[in-house]
View 1 (cartoon, rainbow, N blue to C red):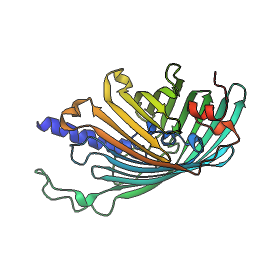
View 2: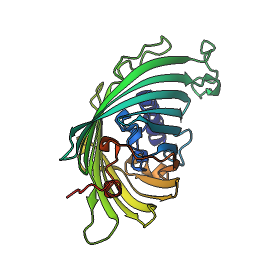
View 3: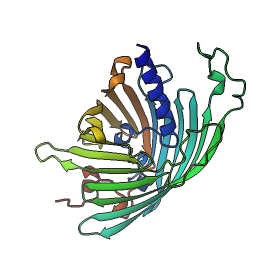
View 4: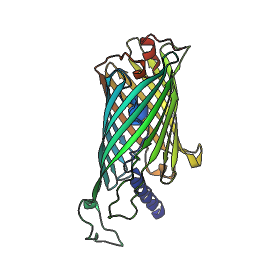
Length: 334
């Protein structure tokens, strides 16, 4: 039992160091919020879009990761968009808060074949802190080292860049996050300085021929950390059903695995969402399939959103991949 407990503590601690400036990406992006993954999606769509996410990981384990985030993006011209992301993240005795400012520009590669290309850039400001006031003594060291004092905090700036290619109902994005090395504070000898990571997100929206106003959207998300080569893959599937007023509901599932353990599940779980008028709600659950599964009830995420200030752009390059948007714009997608 002691070995298992030690394993859990070490796992959470190592995750905390790797998580800094790399907030956990579970299935929040599938809640009609691609902007979570890439700044290239800023301004894609017909609304000012607001999404608030709350994520609690490994429910049942004390001091497990917990995250809240707010995402806003909107179009500022026919072919450009901006966005901002705010987040607050807790993991054991580590805390980080930050903000990202994003800009995207969208161009038409070929109007007839509906090929579009988008470029995105984000500037990130992050504050990382260790809660030393929560440190407690152990059997081996009942008194906390008096040399441990101050907030043990540090701030960093960084950049993300991305590119998005769309062809009719197909989309493919590639992103490079945390381009700059992080400055190191002397309070720890194991803090990583290289936080560069790569993300690829691709999918296809299929219009059902047998069921009216229905879409099926398979997608895949790949993430790799450059410092140690860790990587994971999500395989996702969504079913979306519209009504005559433009409202819709969707259900889906996500399957995540580590790429050095191909097709052995790390997390797996269902998702559901609904959009009514301007309001949006989604819930996702992921069951943990590794050795921690016996100590927690999984990861829960809730998304609440609102879309308003609707206005269709004159440029099709800012329309989303949803079949309904193509239909309303009078574009033949055959």
